Length: 227
Ligand SMILES: [Zn+2]
Image: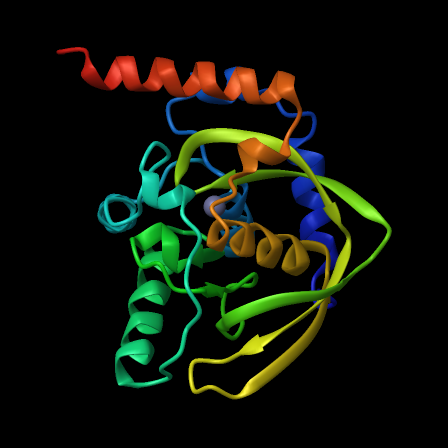
């Protein structure tokens, strides 16, 4: 990503070092993608206005959460670049935007197609990739904190190649080849992982994975507890 290097720097300053437990203790943990979105909107607080929050909750209800076996499945190639696919892209764009996310894989909305959408900058163009293949990865890697709309309340450090070249197709079947770095490279790699049934918990340290599982168990228990 060339356009906004400062954003990632600001995020890193804000979020590192990660402390999953302390973030979970706050009332509304926010995946890194959402923080990114909010930074761009110039909102410093963690509170959303009621309408935005309601839209976000509604969008999140359409996103599969960890534990769903579909998230562990390998998605199948997109073969038909038809009106149905274009509608699916529109639906995913809406869910991603409403959820205040910056990337979404079809797997996350229960569609086992190799399709992902992303938008790393508010007002930036929507990125669409069908059948993405990473053709080249830089030997240099970055460690960055990642959240996932399918794993609410969890942020973990993930090491990934700092730059990649990826080829695929857009929603009309046109060939695309992209060379991207920084946040854009990270988001695309995160979403391609989803298409292979891989989650950020598989890509972090054992210690952080253990912490994350504990947070998830506690959140689950809290949700089951009657008020
Ligand atoms: Zn994710």
